[in-house]
Picture 1: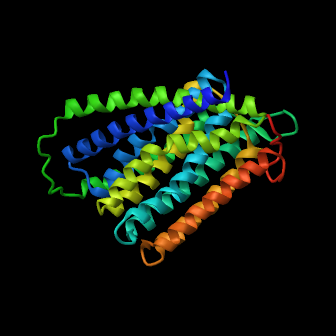
Picture 2: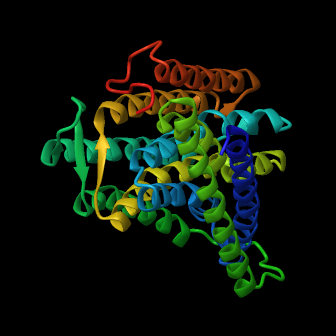
Length: 342
């Protein structure tokens, strides 16, 4: 099958993820309203988990069906970068005024997201230290179910903090005519659509790599990552356009916390074990850390994201994509053991 077929497959997969993400977003928001959750918890947990399902599905599908755990990790890291660089920028640009943040976002959500990045990097490090795997000179380690529990425990702490906020919140919203059974059904349909769409994206990424003699990793961290981030973008941009900047940014940060602390570990728990290439993962996690610090500084400055800062975030993402392309074709060699076609 030619490249045009797989481009069409990627576009169809993206469309299915978009449609499923729309159902997830609307049903999650109605359910959060029905259960009387505070705005920041609604954005950082309920809506974020719903819109993060494509990333979870990517890890599971790429690992179990295709034996491509590295592609799944690439999609998670690429999605995290897309979420914190592109989505806040787009949200600020569509907003009628600078995108507002607040101290809860900066000092709770953003800082806990930094903890999430650290916890995942530690998990990869423990895999290399305690379960080393030899192979082509790369630094590799085996991730086991026991190691996967570490980030999941950290996510448990995150959920405890959110639960405390929920207990202290008194909702004054009217649930209106929300029917929870119907909304849970819509949410289930959205999950199925996303699973089908993710399968199409993963297959397209693998075949792009074979046809163009480039690593499937490259397509995972760009095409698959952007495709699976569409629900997050849809939720955040629409919230920003409606003047709900806090929900918009909370969704981005909460989604990334879930992706890093749950999506990858849950993939390990389902698959049993997987080998992580630390030579590739560590530099990319370093880039993710730098991007996180950049967003943190921008959010803390006057507690808004301005138009100028939005273009700075978009420029940073453009530099990242350009770097990935140069790495894939050996123009640069900052990522160890990342030759074309591997």
